[in-house]
Length: 250
Length: 266
Image 1 (tube, rainbow over the protein chains, first blue to last red):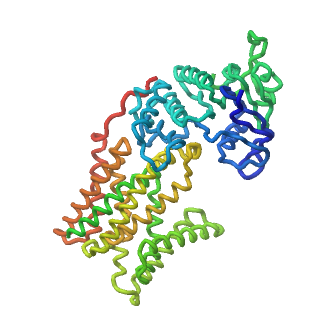
Image 2 (cartoon, rainbow over the protein chains, first blue to last red):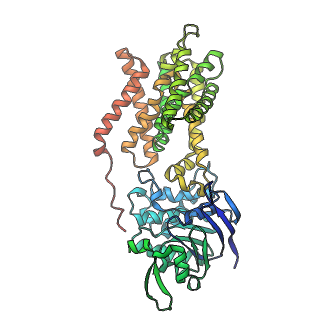
């Protein structure tokens, strides 16, 4: 399996003491990796370090020339006068020089990306008038337009309705099948169990590996603290454990 | 009169398009501060016979340094520091421009004299406005992306600082284009007014820009006629008609703005 992204002993922060330390993992072709951790555990800091927005205090980061980012939809301005297609086409900035006007081919690429997230019919709708789930899908379409080998998704399922969540799950599978690497920051342990590997962070790397071997009670306690909520053991014999955040919103 | 109209159209079109970005980026107060803070640069350039654009550039640099220094003063907040620096610089510029020893005509930089625009002024303003509009067209995609979600702009290859600096430079250029006709005090009306009007009714950026240009052109014509027939200052008449247009559109906006569609059902 070709390695698309590699991080070795990374420590990164915002100028002061590192927010997250000792992070070592890699993303292979077609891999979907869940990034688990509490709020403030370093998930967003890790993403910003991978994007080159933060100084790497220690260690090394090797990333492909393009990284696609799907931020949380709350960060986008809802009063901005743009359509879903306008937002999707922002992804062309990674490929088409910033000063060049977009052509028909670029627009068709944007429409295809919206089609993949089930929103082609809403291409001309105002972004701010879409539902939360639809807005999240538009941001995924923008990342698809970037055509990056590795995508970073920052809690893409947070506040998303069930149809959008199902569609996003299918899309993540498709992206893996296409050979893209996907890093998904999430609070949902059950979902993370279905992905290829998980990276557990709590201001430092707690564990990294296949979910079945990695998501043990000990690792989850170190990741989320002692306040995890035990549930009955699943069919695979591994106890399902929900962090308080997830439990609160369940 | 024809030259006055052409000058107002140049200022109006550039101000309308650039103003849309200023309004969307919520930079109206910053743009006003910048326009006033660079005033000493314009005055010095006019006195020594240097191009106004050069004076504006120097004025921006001095203003930036002054704001940076003022923010280091203990016991005052950032907004107070900006206000102190801007009013100090503007006061200095006005003091020099209106001093008896200064060459005549410098007060025109404050209040403008659109009827006194020469052919040379018009050519210079036209060239600068054209370059600025081309720059705005080239910057359209980075501006759109950085304004939509500043935090994600870098992941798309857009540097928000570069976008901010480009906007700052374009505001300075627009002030130079408009200062001859509307003066440093009223040029902001052409930058903010038409765009604020268009924001009330435009749902998409191209619509908003076209609407702002239409308002700017209509207000330039109406203001010029008002100035001619009512014998009032042209700059003030244009600014006044823009404010009247805003109030009228604000009252009518519930009727003019289309209702949101029912897209938000999954």
